[in-house]
Amino acid sequence: MRKRYCVKVEINNNEVHNASYCSLFDIATDLGLTYDAVASISCGRSKLYTGEGFKYNPKIVIEKILVNNIDNAEESKKTIGKKESTKEG
View 1 (cartoon, rainbow, N blue to C red):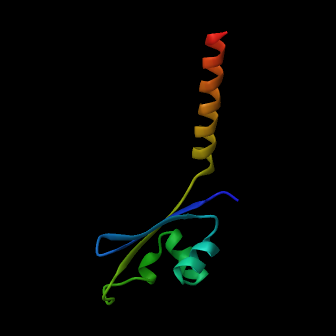
View 2: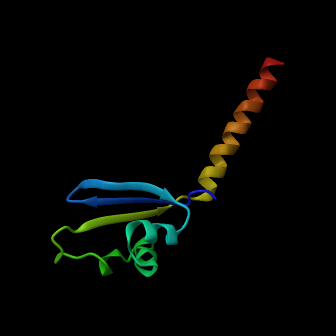
């Protein structure tokens, strides 16, 4: 299964975690959070789970890796390879 999410966690401007995951459930399991918390953070509602009252206020960013970006990059590689082989022959 391909990686669909990129997760970065920072505490006091120090990156403490940077990894890619297949699902939100995998993120929740690895970070020790609930699925609901991870789902909320992934759609921009992270203020529910972090706040100024914490001694170490983590900044958690979950970005979805778009399929189109991966497909376009792979298609470009195939197209470039075809053009080069056509020029040689």
